[in-house]
Image 1 (cartoon, rainbow, N blue to C red):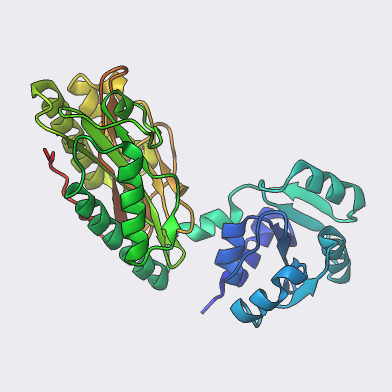
Image 2 (image 1 turned 120 degrees about the horizontal axis):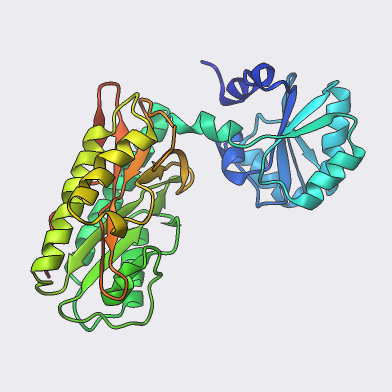
Length: 354
């Protein structure tokens, strides 16, 4: 089987490079099986070899987590990069856009090799998941579905948003998650109209909608799930809006198949919401890939040309937001299969009135 490092090396000729410097922690993890904190080292891949460059703080850890990877232990990371490139006769180095300006300037001043900033090289390799990755994502999505469903049993008027978020995070970690992949969103009432409204000390009240948006890591891979519930009857208008979002999501999921573009999938839901009179209230993209990161390719939204492929995992997350009033979002994780799709998250999707 071709290794991930070899798959990266196979991209060198099409990209007109003969080496690549990996600074992103997620991309280091993907290629080498371990990573260091940003700025604490690099994975350098040339046409001849791969070597991990870091300092003594990580020496014992990396010896255990990637014993077969050659390592250079030094505090002068970039000097080591220069020396490896010269030893391997590398002439054109590709760089990730996560590199800092100071790092870029040093390399530009000192390297004999040409340097070429390149975005999404390893990220694109990561989009199509291997069977082992899919197995972990299934565990993450299943556990998150269970956790959010359990939260419904304790969510009630009088609880603060922050307490609800903390309850969910504690439940998830007690049941096997290693932690959240972003700050858990619990937004109620007028704050539910803020798509990224972080949990606050606001007390949730009867009659309000509550949006819960969360993602949790299990064995290094994340989920991403959103549900909107009502604390008491929200009224006819919001019930109608919820049904419209739910139907839009069904259309989005139905369109999520191999060969479909991000733009085409977006249209499936956005056009329906526009027909129902909610077009102006859908103010963000329709979805994105998940995996080692909470946001990775492919992207789903207006104008995105990304083509879906089997074994990618993407979100389907339409929403409508009425400023100063309420907001509604429903999000699920969807596996693109050879012949269609499979929804991985299983928390109830119909409007729940608590």
